[in-house]
Image (cartoon, rainbow over the protein chains, first blue to last red):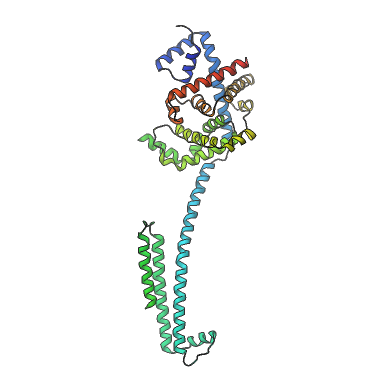
Length: 194
Length: 182
């Protein structure tokens, strides 16, 4: 077999030869000093480069934080949780004002009722006096207050149960959520009007 | 199927993944772009991307090849930025090969041997300077990562013959540096 050409050596290194042909060329180079030297001239720098650059990158990699990617991935999970909290807070933020509004409406109605009862006899009472009077009002009005606060508590409990359900429920498909919450709200409003 | 599951669980363990593949990936990116700091940043992104997208790993190549293809895309993204090119020229953090050669495994560590190895490695590094970014990446995949031609062609989305042409060009450049050093 004749000596290896430069092109054959390149093909051998590039890995573009058939396995059989590559083995033949290697075999020849192993027994031919001139070809072995020619092959080593290009193969040896490549091997040195591979070893030195790996030594460098292993050392550099060892100086990097132990698990930077994991921390950042964790941070992303954290971010997900944060977004979850924000969403939950937004939901609560939407529900709490409704609760407050409904409670205010009920208190306003209770005050109006008291005012209507007491109105004709004491038309010019100031607010603190009105409160004092309403606490010491007739048995009827006391019964009404107890009844109303019981209704209020029951209504609040229903609303809170509804909030719990909403928070615990899996994320609803678009279109299904408004139906449920609208239904509950209608019920709540119905209770107030009663 | 079993291989996919095995690779899948390998991808779930981010610690082991980083420990096993980071040095080689860092080398691939570093010597493709010639900037150590930027290479580190790309490698961080690469592992994050791989971890978050681990469901997409189909197991039709090795984990190393898959990670290399992610790193390759990130390198290309960087190269698209003109700004990056500017900064790369201004503040590229090059590698001191002679220093790196001191960290070779013990059998390589006689001072004369270390010096010789460092010298030869420098010749290849100098040869890389004359290559295009694609040629550098192909060179690294073949001569550092030891990927075969079909794998390289698939990873870099080029025909095998084009990959071969780039590798011939790279070897010509190495030969020129070796000859110049004589």
